Image 1 (cartoon, rainbow, N blue to C red):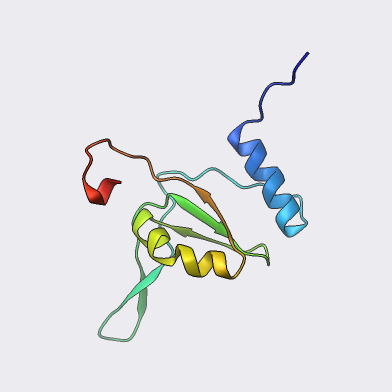
Image 2 (tube, rainbow, N blue to C red; image 1 turned 180 degrees about the vertical axis):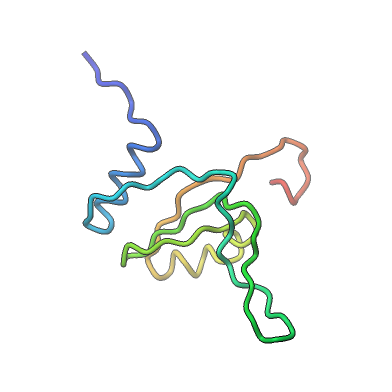
Length: 102
């Protein structure tokens, strides 16, 4: 008898545990998870984060993670992969066919 396929959460959890050598869980992203990308420096020199809804979790070899919106994940993907980070998640597509949604 074949075993049922693993859920996405089970696959992500086992991948993260193998990646960083710890038994921690990767929690699914929610509507309340926001992009961590620092993009704006205000007139006082204070860095503000993007704040858009996060669709991607980037896990670094140290076990630390950052959350990214679709725009910043696309911008930073090559650099993150170059340093050995693992990217989890996917931005849902609306199906309109516009370049911004693809």
